[in-house]
Image (cartoon, rainbow over all chains, first blue to last red; front, top):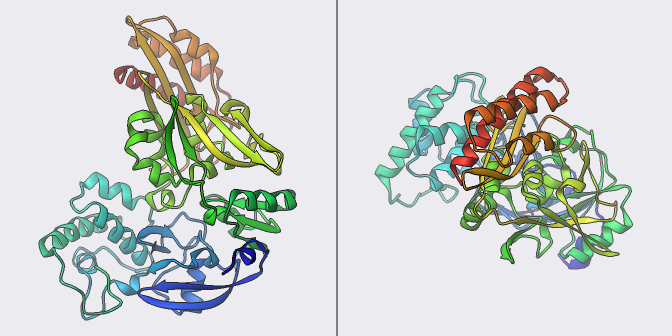
Length: 180
Length: 285
């Protein structure tokens, strides 16, 4: 987009971004949050929307590799960026090691918060492959769960760290939408 | 749609941003990291007509040492500051405090300048700026001026910035041989502080000097208590002296009660935090 049109005041704007490896171009209202764009425009309902003011963490996604709240970013701001959502993590037949660990350690019950916990944890374990329990608890402090009491989630992330380390270097995923 | 409707502009230079701000100074709002403003927009507590997004403005994202100060561009992400070896070495108070700001997902977007300009009375960075004697740089079409941190924070969510002024940089004096500590109490790690303190002290020949304490969460702006700072100056740092300062702090502060904590609780916690922070700061000199 030209420089002049960026400075001009807009109600709507055309954006182009990559989501889970696929490019999308859409015209969006400038006040549409990124999470609403992902769910309502692209139909990617794996990302959940909870408090819509940055407290619960359910809408956590990766923006250019960093975990962020997608309810606190407008879709127009994500123009040109690379987004990863929980849909890229694994498939029902081939779960990501983190998803396997959440299943094995009862890291979820109702599942509402799970996508946010998974995306927070994916980014965290990339940066901190061998975390301490204190580091795990601190990073998970940004996500709320009302079912599990968190213990199972902490255990799942600890176990996933070991699983990921045991399998590294990771084989290239066969699903084009998958991430490590 | 969560927020009320607004018009959006994404300038790419400071001059473009200043032009937009001058034109919309009374109905516009500047969007930095958005971690405080977007919640207000989503809840429709803020309803600006124009949103001026700084995220594509070049040249406001840097950390550089310059003549005994570390200058940080207003749009520098908090996560970048947290990971900066220079900040860790030269500004240990900022480095320690910034890890209490929100959660990693918040700090990945949140900016240093945004937190300062938002001026939340429970935020960490304003207290660090006041304790450190930081200088804030404001630009407008009329030019550039600098403000010291204590004159910058005016009241709850209010700063000395004029409607057409943009905060572009904050300069922290390098801490040097001063010991520092930041402590806070919140309901969970990453929440706003119920009470917190930034402490700075120098010890020379066994005596304390250059004592600075700035409290957050206990008033409309970061609070200093000259009497408490003076009580430590020139004296040996002992538990007895820290206890004395703790008493002065609890007696002098006049915080509000809210659903999270009573005024009495905040007073007592602040006194205890002050003693602990000073002991930690002395041990780090």
